[in-house]
Image (tube, rainbow, N blue to C red; front, top):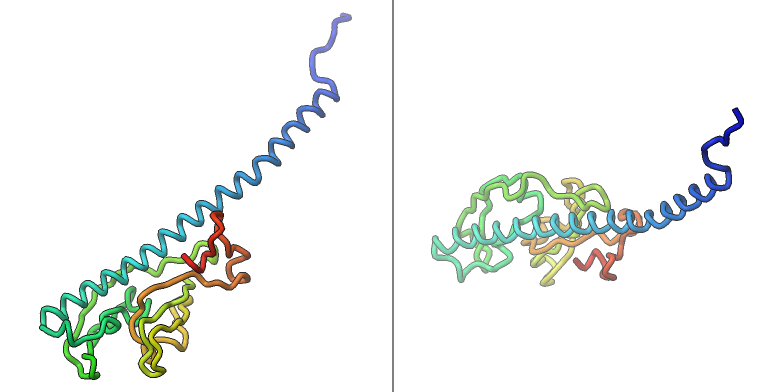
Length: 189
């Protein structure tokens, strides 16, 4: 039998492998951007979940204070959660004081979160906590941290009313993810 063999030459195989390599190199940035967009969406959703829980706490507390006729005697910061942990594991009652520091009503909150959502870039629940007031220092706004269920020294004993959260800005903790695809900083979200 003196027929030609069917198959690919070494040159044809090298061309196919080179083309596949170029396609693979082009796919890596697309996959990375897709991963980052997924993490950003999860981060946005987790921040929105925490912020919604803060608003629900505020609404329920405001309703209790209003039902007892003390709405205009209580500062807004008293109707916000004392810590992030309090929205997961509330230990009622929370005594609401009027502007003069006198207790006026007790608030029995429900758990507003099943668990504290995590920052997907860190892989843990590490948030910068923004407090509405700090009566012992006289400042109007202050910042503390929340990490793995433990609040910093800036907690409800010195600060009143969690009104917002933001991302931990530490590049080492964020594994370098400090700027979003759209150019904004995650800490500003």
